[in-house]
Every structure is written in C-alpha cells, then in structure tokens.
Image 1: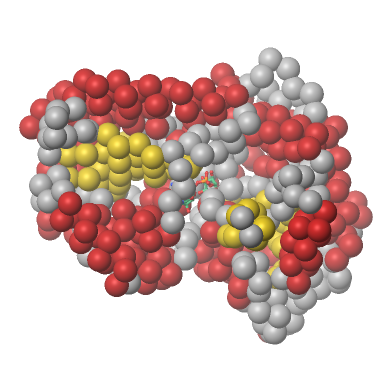
Image 2: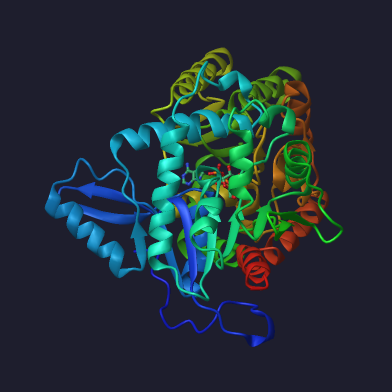
Length: 486
Ligand code: ADQ
C-alpha cells in the first residue's frame, strides 16, 4: 500500500528558522495508486508514471495528505468500492470521485486531448473544436472543495500538473492566507502555441493563484513569463518574482530527479544481477539498444524505430549483432490519437522486422505492456545503449533511472535535446530526434564507443543523478513554499 506516510514525521524539511509548519497536502489528478482486480477481489497497487514514482518517496517521509482521483471504480460493486475507499482514508489519501462523463470531458477531452498536445507543441493533434472547459472548471472546483475541507492554518498545499491549472486561483479565492505551490511537470509551450487556447488567460490566471510556481527548466519559465508579459503586462523581477493582484509570486526552476539511491540499490540486488546474467547468456554476441516509454506521440517512438532502421542500412555491420527492445506502457487508450499511434508503431515494427530479420535474428522486439520492477531494472542494467528520443518531454525520468541503475558505470545514453533532462545530462549523446539519420549515426557512435569514454560519460551522468535526486527536488520546492511570508 502506498501513500502511507509516517504520521509522526515532526516537520517539513528545510523550514526556515526551525519554525514548525503543518502538513503537506499534495494534490494531483491521480492518486498514486491503481486498482488491481483479481479472482479474490480488488486491491490498491502503486501506479507507474513519473509523478507517482517521484513523489512516493516524499509522501513516505513527510506528514502528508494526498488528494486525487482514485481511478474508475464504476465496475466494482458497492461493497468492494466502499472497502477500497475506506482503505484509502486509513492511509491519509483523500479520493476525489469523478463521474464517467467528467472523466471523459475533464481528463480525456480537455486535459489529454487539448492541454497535453498544446504543451508538447502538437497543434496537429487538436480536435477541430473543444467544448468542456466548464467541466474542467467544475472538476478543478471539486478538487478545491476537497482541499479546503482538510486545510488548516500552517498546512502547505502543493498542486501538480496540467489537469489542475485553475485550482490555485480557485483555492486562493477560498483560502486567501494559504501557502499554495504549483508545479508543472510538462513543458510550458512557446506563447505562440499557448495562445491558440481560447481560455489562455483564465489558465494563466489560474496558475497565478499560487505563491510558488515551479518548472523543470529555464526555457519553460521563459515561455511562461513571455505569456504573462503579453497577456497581463507583468514583468518578472531580478528575484524571479511577479506581482499580481497585490501578491508576490515566485517563479522557480526545480528540475525533478528520481529516487536514485533506491534505484541503484535495487539494481545491484542479487535477483536483478542474476536476471542480467541470464539475459547476457541468452544472447552473448548481441548488443542491446533499449527504449522505455509510455506509448505517447510526444515520446518519438516512430522516428526512433526509423533511426534504428537507418543504423541497419547505413552500418550493415550491425545486422545480426544488435537488437532493439522497445517497451511501451499502454497509455490513454480512450484518446483517438493514442490508438492511431499504437497502429503506426506496430506497423513500423513489423515492416522493419520483415525487411531485416533472418531465420535466427529479429532486429526489433516490441512489448506493449508494463513490466515489473525487477525486469525494468535488469533491462536498464543490460542495455548497451539507452535510446531516449522524445520530440518534447517535460523532464524524462527514464534517462535518469538508466544512469542511476548503471553501478557498472557502463552503457551509453542517447538523449533528445527536447527533453528537459538534456539541460542537465550533458554527458549523454544529445541528439535532435527529428533528424532520423542523425540519430542513426548517434546509434553507431554509441555502439562503437570505447570503454574508457563510456565510463567517463556514465560516471558524470551518475554523479549528477545521484546528487540531484527527487528528495532534493521536493525539499527545494517545499522550502520555497514554506518560506513564503504570511
Ligand atoms: P511521463 O510522461 O510519465 O511523466 P517519464 O518521466 O519518462 O514520463 O516517467 C515514466 C515512468 O514510467 C518512469 O518512472 C518509468 O520507469 C516508468 N515506465 C515507463 N515504461 C514502463 C514499462 N514498460 N513498465 C514499467 N514502468 C515503465 C511526466 C512528464 C515527464 C516528467 C515526469 C515527471 O511527461 O516529462 O519527467 O512527468 O515530472
């Protein structure tokens, strides 16, 4: 069971002057749990995904309440769903229930069908017309009710991500004295793209209800301040604050990290080590190129497959000697663009395999499913090359997980310049994911790189990832929020 923080944690980290504050209220669209149903009934299990895995460690260490949507319970009978909701309450996790219609409009149509493509520069993925901003507002209001119900003076409120852009302002109206933080996990796009949204001003004003607004990178903050200037005539001062409606709002850069020590420790465990040996024994003469993503058009999987094909065409010496394993976690299957992407990826895999396979070798293995922790870690450890080539990605935690797991200081990371992680992981081979031939060449370079060069790069990547971990990220953010004068 996750989301069960220690109740006795005395104080939030880094509160200035040792001043005690109250609890940390984390608010995100999804609670960090999903329901697993089996013959015996239903139970919560930890959900995958960047935000869930990143904040889980924080939620264990701080006196935390987590508010969010628990997922669709409508297929369960009343007794089962009642029991599950009771378990959540016991673990200081507060569910916000959504109707089927709200899930369709707020989550699928607006959040994932409009805001996600806009923030990832994909105007081509927009529907011709979007209704549903009223439902988006109403659901944000529902979250505001849930927060206002539990908030007490001294509590800090930390809101996450694009589903809840209106929530900071809705809460500010109800709790003028509250310390409210907002962190955007995905890019804030160039204003030229953001301004295509009819509700651009309401969304920006929604975010400005917070005292601290956090972004992964300087570039996203730059886009946000450009939007503020053009929409509201606001200027950021030298201390990275803006003034709005008589309040001073901090605009911070908080690049998210991972629980690197946890990854490193689990990756070095005996079970993972023996799984790695098994994999190597199975294909001793083959190099492994690895891709791990949610199946999302922002992750660049189709072009990545074409780049691998270019490697085989341009450098035929690798035919029969390298294999590309792409794992894609099923994601947002109810949104049409995602179903289309799935078809496209499957067609490409089968086309490339049809063209290059021999009776004893298949160039691409594709798995459309989630894998367990042990398999994930053994793959990270077995890969010769990790191929992380999103077309746009807020941060990308997979790149960091790969580095954390490489206790052998081996393996090469190829990383898209359009992932937030590229700002920090400069010892990767940084590529333009749209340049299919260029990524093919980078693959050849990575596969041919000598041992000392691989180790030199990996050592530096690991140093960075170990130091800038998720605890530091959360501490920095919470510290900034706790320091807001009241
Ligand atoms: P995501 O888009 O979900 O996160 P990412 O940061 O890469 O992307 O995190 C994906 C997570 O899912 C990783 O922890 C990874 O281990 C896990 N995962 C992926 N494939 C898996 C598989 N087949 N089986 C099991 N686990 C798998 C959003 C933003 C990112 C940002 C994060 C955090 O889109 O840009 O980095 O939030 O802010």
